[in-house]
Length: 475
View 1 (cartoon, rainbow, N blue to C red):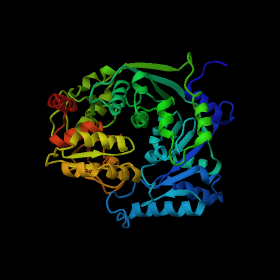
View 2: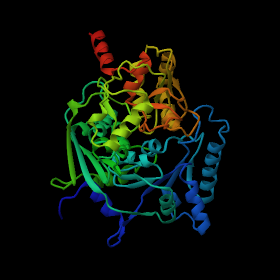
View 3: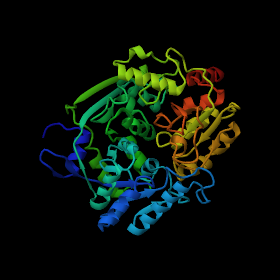
View 4: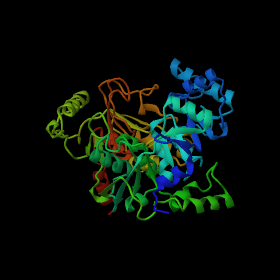
């Protein structure tokens, strides 16, 4: 048999049927649903008199519309309350496990899957949410689907999908102090653009990737969709197996060892062909921040905003100028030192316990600037509990940061945690589109470390300076 990629090994194993000159019928191992994209799918099933085919393979949680304060009270926003209530009703009617508000496993769908051991290597995983690519960090094929496809999976446990092209992005070397996995993915997207991965499933490889923790790997795969890719994935290794071991719904004992033996066969074979290969050096990656209205508009934290003249065609130049106008920024300007009113640390990109620990280590014993509203939103009830058990909540409170309850929060303007019109927010989320965090809000994407040091100073700051100061202070 010829050498095969990680992607092809998993895809081929899950093909139920190949349609000549058409898509494959792909079997789905895990289906996650939430309150936003599932109501229409359930309504479609009911109109056709169809039941959920395999309800035990679907897991539901409430995350997008939920408030992050006073979750024990009824949701105040009418539409949000209706959507969460409808999810509860649909799950009860169809026998689907629901981790709703106040459940100990509730949280952002792409945080709870991995932490509970539901997400495992070699799986096919879908959800009516584009950032399902997060789960690819485990060596799984994971991607977002539309509402009609949610209905398709509920009805058949399969989905019609055309096989995408394969891309491998290799990053070798060591990251500089203060540079994180969020900076890696923002750097890649800035290099290839917000559409550079269109039509591809991306595998991340190289020594810099292998050195990352599972939570850091999830951040990278999470934002694969922001370069237009269908999804991202990383080959499973001992780091993966150690993370999965002991999780609530993961295999145990002899069953786990059998699964690990299989998982070890998944990495890409030597000599396997990719449609496109890209290579980067970790040492070249600085702390990153975005300046525009798509994640590809990113620069080094100490860089300058590029000029429109460097954009290839007139239509793109017009779009570039429109983005700067919306952001209230100019070509040639630096973001370093720019005053900021809001900092948001959370989302399915950066709301795991490792992210919170990094921020706590940076802000401990310090105090945020008075002009900054700094929110920290844990990705799940499990993360929230762990943060409180470790005393991170006290560190945040003493530094003036507000630790709230889990949810998607200010990643998107779909709940109460919106950024006011015209205000700048340094955000650890994944999208900086116009109005993404609220009508007229201006979003600058960055790592948790960059967001934290910005909150402390009250203006966009380079975390490497703090690192240098701490190194000097410690002798």
